[in-house]
Amino acid sequence: MKIRKGDEVIVLAGKDKGATGKVLRTIPREERVVVEGVNLITKNIKADQQRAGKESGRVTVEAPLHVSNVAIVEDGKPVRVGYRIDENEDGTTTKVRISRRSGKEI
Image (cartoon, rainbow, N blue to C red; front, side, top):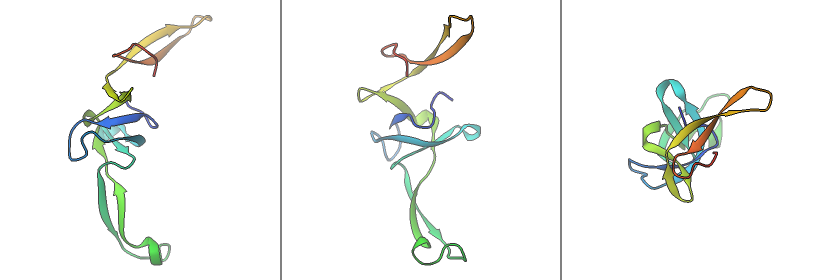
């Protein structure tokens, strides 16, 4: 997956199309990401010994989105991500994410 935790992304499809937010969590096995303030759902949480009072009841949380419905934001526009392999002075190589729009390192 080319999108990582902490990336600033824009939603390309769905009910929150056009919304931007920070990636809170990635789920690589399911190819999904959780974006801050996007795809909000209401969950009913039952009270138990640990959650007493205000933590139980109706809680609004972010639900996962498929990774194909989000793109990294650069200057307010969606950007595709590519990779470049850089060679260091000591002969080792590092794989770096780059923006396909500008060629800059992400």
